[in-house]
Length: 84
Image (cartoon, rainbow, N blue to C red; front, side, top):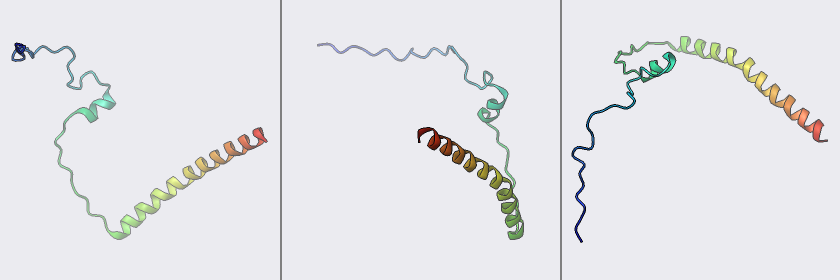
């Protein structure tokens, strides 16, 4: 039995059906798709500044966390009263 010759040397002729260079994306997605070569500057932060940053982050996140927990509690209470 004769083997079928695989003609793949002219398979890719260079035509583009849909260019994937990022121009088709919305602006907010195009930022992440673009290849930027910006150098990041390392910032020196002292222990006191790091502690203050951590405290500020938790002071902002704690009320949101409490609201989420309260929402789950209210939902659980409603489900409990509904099924009781």
